[in-house]
Image (cartoon, rainbow, N blue to C red; front, side):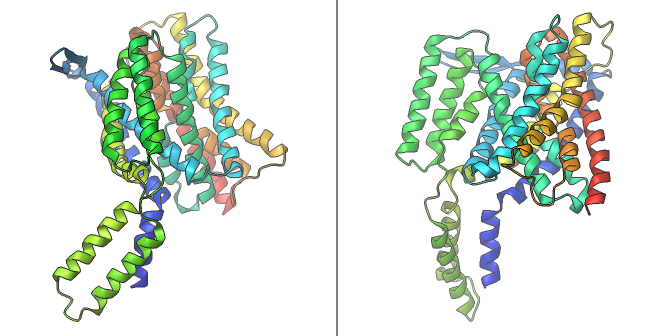
Length: 435
């Protein structure tokens, strides 16, 4: 009986283990989606592929009308749910996870900042006479691919290194959201911005009054999404903002959950017939209810969204945005500079910024590396962080004019592939030595 109780409690309290498994397996689907998109875009099916995602789709209700191409419903709509997931992950790490104390948080936060600033500076330095708006593209790390690549190295990878890279990627996502909100907004429509602020105030009030139901938060979040979409701020920011106000405390304390499960299992074990009686059904119902509400609304929503984002939203985004043609023709000077800035930022800037920040921080004596983790392994993790893909491609759709997006995405794809191979080969050597 006690083993059963322990397994139930462990499953409730082990979000990080489930997170690693889900992120690593979803990356396989994303690779498949990308390969399929590349094949379709470079064969006779290319016109059908491109036409499909340019189809207009929307809703009309009285004076309300919202019509957009399917590709923008994916990039503005589905990706808002992805950013809701990102916001929940960020909040979990800062409230209950690896970033919940200053000593834990300092290392991955400083590493993430260094890993964002240095690539941006490298891109800007190479593009002083080019397209400067792309400086945000090489800042991002694709968390699914980075974790997925790390798990390919097997059980020899120290847990501390996995936690470091996952925490770094979470902070990296938060920085990317801030960059999108602050620097990739062209014009602002004040009237809709006022309504967006009002929506945020409603979310704040619900949080303060401890509203535990998820429905009201999601409804107000949808209103916020629409207001931001119309205001000029990228609508996906609504996902992160909504996540910040969803309660992180459960309605039922864990000790109550543990006692309820023990009592229910004890009564079932003492039932000689072991038949499904009305009393047993009631006990099962109590366990399900208690298990549900012993998790916070934040945790419940994160658990519900994780599979949706990992197995549907991210592969769909990859499939719709990676239809690149390899026939780029003659590249202009601006295109060459842009390509060099993205490649150098991801391949060189990411590991340089991460490792340099960690080294400087360690010299202060205020932090140390996680248990079992060596500096060469941090270098390898920095290389894997150069896999930009999802977030870099997303930012590139806002940073570059349409005629340059194909080239920018090819640059991201190539640089991410090089970063992945360098990181895997480097870590494989040093993880063996660490063992």
